[in-house]
Amino acid sequence: MTTPADNTTVTLQAQCLCRAHTFTATVPVSALPLRGSSCHCTSCRHVTGALRTSSAAWPGDAAAIVRAAAAGSAKDAAGNDDGGVPLRRYRRSPRLNVLFCGRCGSKLFFEEFEAPAAAAAAATANPAGYRVFTGVLSVLGEVQTQTQLRVVRCEDHIYVGDTGDGGAAAWLRGINGEDGPCARVWLGGRGESEEVPPGKWWPAVGELLSPEVTLKAAEGDRGNVPFRCHCGGVQFVLRAGEAQRDWEERQRRGEELPVWIDPVTHKALVVMDCCDSCRIWNGAEVLNWTFALVEHISFAGPGADGFSKTTPELKQAFEANDGRLGTLAMYASSPEVQRYFCSKCSACVFFAINSRPEMVDIGLGLLDSPDGARAERVTSWALGGRLTWQKDFEGTWREGLLHAISRDSELWRIERGYPKNWVRAAREKAAEAGGK
Picture 1 (cartoon, helix red, strand yellow):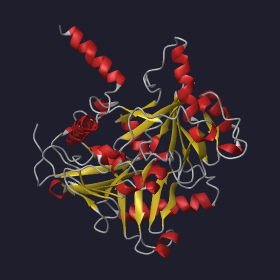
Picture 2 (picture 1 turned 60 degrees about the horizontal axis):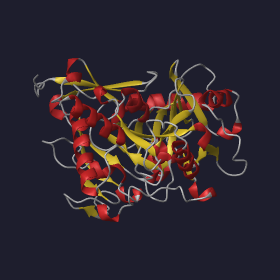
Picture 3 (picture 1 turned 90 degrees about the horizontal axis):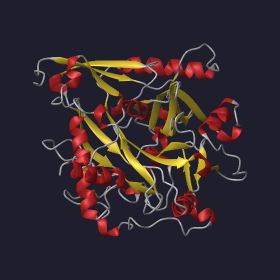
Picture 4 (picture 1 turned 180 degrees about the vertical axis):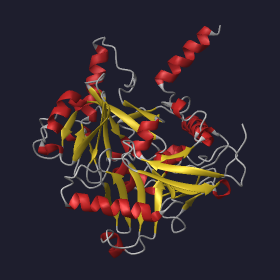
């Protein structure tokens, strides 16, 4: 397989999950890779549900985005009653808006402005530029499967200090692959904050929690971890301490634990998900999910009781317009799957599937854990080895990213002395036994 010649062109596509919005840009191969950046700030985590955002300057026609966003604003102002699907605009910060699909919640672009007043009046002001969420990018034509084609190069990770524990930046410095440049890491803004020296982790692994620490001894509200979207329209509570004690008791009674519960700490698994659908829906290249029984989730604030016990009940509450769900919206990406997101700010909240009515996946970036973005008193991480749904990256231009994350998360796991994920350990043990 050869890399396309520099004098050829490729067509990049940014498309939401429901395909209501599609934007294209034809660029020479010599213009690639696009210069990308990852932001790990608290706002980006809560506006997506991921541990970071990944974006790059959009090389296509900005006027097409302006027209779609203006049409979306007009639809929303009119009550969105004409059957169209709006491209919604959410003011993420004084100079930055998020543009997302009003039907499926896919995040497509950051809309940048030079002055806060312009962002506030985005419907009539001219933006300084657009940055595409790299998770929605695809390459049309045969070069989609060119593993040597570099579409995006991540130049840096910014606002890593907001995570408290390093978040996903711990294993993303080598995000550009073995032969690509290492991404720089800043605790705050680019060039205006402390830079983490190459070859160093922040924080140092010795400053992190022991993997054995849990919330089992935290009674009442002290064992609860709130999770919320950026705008605050969706606010729930994960009763993590209660859940860990519950799983420990079930194990003591001889019950078999689900595969997503750590059999030693009884914390919930976190996976690195490469699934194409989740990537497009969220906008991040890799989405981190954690898992919970629906019965371990409550409403936030007064009247916390009454949350659904199963995903069919959750769907019924949504369809009945239960006001306690706030701005929660739902998109059925298939007859069996429900994807819940905030209709105002676009944060990905829950993934539910009919075959697992007792549980949901939760976007880890929404958790407000005092331990840090990885919420390690609540979660147990699958680091190194195979990533979830990694076949969706294999044979594509994202394959280098896949290998980099697998390699670097394993290096960080070993350096830290973090235990190997129990599922991986069992799989490797079985493979070893089969080879004897």
